[in-house]
Length: 223
Ligand code: PEP
Image (cartoon, rainbow, N blue to C red; front, top):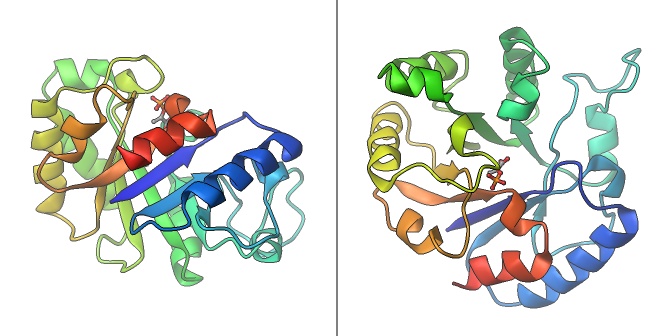
């Protein structure tokens, strides 16, 4: 199973060091794939028992892009995994930038967790599947280092996950388009994780709030 933690704009360099130390110890013997996306200011140079990923980057090696982080900066921390298309970033940019990020990350062989998800309005209009298909149209669904995360916007940070039936329907649909491992994200917690991981085609979870405390994240991993 894949357990990914998106720490968003939380944790500092010093608090993430402690987080990583505790997580490293807990992961000394695990067969699961664990990915953590810390804020980029907190990237660690040390070797970890988990994969460090970047929450965001700019599709360049380096250059005149004020305030951005390029591949050169990720390389310094041996970061080989990126998150693209999270709804909190989609709200700030356009699809062209998402596509440029995907193409750049693919060209450089990064593991990509590509997030898609509809809002409540789309869901209530029964347009979820066509909306998601459109979001997926801009990327190479056969890229061998791709993971797709279904994260309905109405469930992110709300404490209310999508229903088992809805997740099942969506993952079934995505699996008809791509062989990539599929994650679910959106208010995953200790009460619903078992049921979510048991859903057909679900290869893991992307966790926000419930992974902010390392002890909680470890509990979710260890079941
Ligand atoms: C997320 O933002 O990717 C996420 C899954 O958040 P949460 O678990 O808090 O809903």
